[in-house]
Image (cartoon, rainbow, N blue to C red; front, top):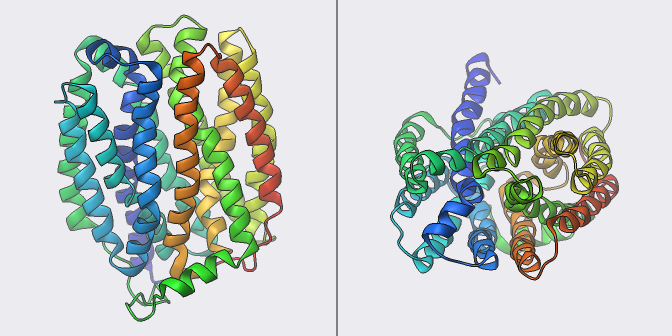
Length: 405
């Protein structure tokens, strides 16, 4: 890779960082606006949980298709189209008048956002090899954390002005940035992508056989499904956990349930990407080891957060968990590249999203249902903590065939 290509490789990460930020900000605004939205549009807690579940179910079903399209065609066009559509839907969400309209916009947002992540992480892998792969992946993921943290501001926007204003504001911002993406983002040159994606080169049956015949990929599916169940359950209900468990206002609970964990994840993703690239030079399982160890540490601290009655101990527990989550996000796609054929990497990520997000969607609804029948979020989060711990040991069992692909 020449100097100009290397510089643009980091420019790609920068462009996609802002798209990733908008991706998670738009989808998570609803979590920090629970109380004012329910006051404006009456619904039960189970129905509120279903809003996120509907988004995730659609997102999960279409993620494999998103990966398939990104492997077959232009990753840039998949990214641009996804950003433009979900930004328009975000804008329209601010105009809904009843629950049916609200859940419909959430479902459509699931359609539009499903195509982004497989294309984005695959494009970053196209441009970054070897010693920069985990760092580039990690920096891209910091955009997700920024979006999650900023999503917590939705509670303040709703308190000071109106919850609809947040959707109008960020919808317009996304539409404007889609224009920037259209002109600034480029697919990796064919000489950088050694496997040329052509219609004759991509066989659907061979793709399925290649993915599902690899024990490492099957373990990735198990691992990814387990952590997705825990992650989505935590993120969907964490603001409510702080609001009700520590008697916080909507704004304070929104920040407590998003800001601290995302700042910790930001630190974890940067440190995890750096350490994984270093470790991977000496060990084929370096990226796996750093991620697994941090989950084995992070699970007990998540349990501590759920078990304590002291606010700052709960914050400390969620910060340590956030550090472990950051390691995962920096290294998940790089680990996939070690067990999946290069021309199927976006599809492999998309299929993983299907299993992980679908199971997470069900668990978010279950969380709301359990809350409706009197089961505390403390217990739900304790179970999630055990799941995080187990996922670390599952990850340790993966045996990658090669270091980079």
